[in-house]
Each structure stands twice: as structure tokens, then as C-alpha cells.
Image (cartoon, rainbow, N blue to C red; front, side):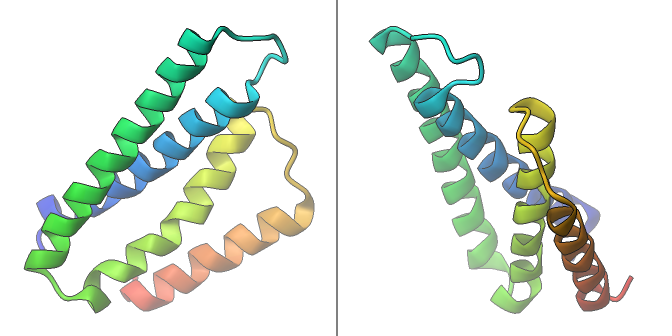
Length: 114
């Protein structure tokens, strides 16, 4: 797997995390204020667009590489998502969450052979 392919795999995970953050923002908001239907629709559209981009990029990668090579990157999604929700949405993460993310990261490093 080349550095470019690794970059695409990481980019896929960023797309899925960003898409889910936008969907969460659209549905719940981060400021607690009422939004117009247009604003909610725009946030939803942006989230769906990012998830669609992830889907088609992931299909392209699946057509070129073995699933066993690619699937380890799916483990990054919960890590990126929890850190992003903490950073961008202000969600509280308990100590158990941070420990779990650390264990996931350690497992990914074992699988990747780092």
C-alpha cells in the first residue's frame, strides 16, 4: 500500500467523521437556538454530501485493495469521532471513553505492525 493510498484511507475516515458531525449539528445544534428549515437543510445536505463522498471513495479503494488491508482503518473512525465531538461539539467524554480510545489506538498499531 502506497503513501497515497494510506492518505486516501485516512481521508475516508475524516470524511465520515465530518459528515456525522454535520448531521449531528443539523439535528441537535451546538448552540441550543432554533434554526430555520433552510439552515437545518443546508447542514443536512453538507453532511450527506460528505458521507456520499466517503462512500464512493471507499468503494474505489475496495475495488483496488483487499478488505483485510483497508478495514483496519475503520477502527480510526470511533477515535476521530470522539475527539472531534469533544473538540467541536463540546461533548463531555468520561475517563472510560478516553481509556477505550487509547485501547483502540493500541490495537490499531498492533494490527498495522507499527
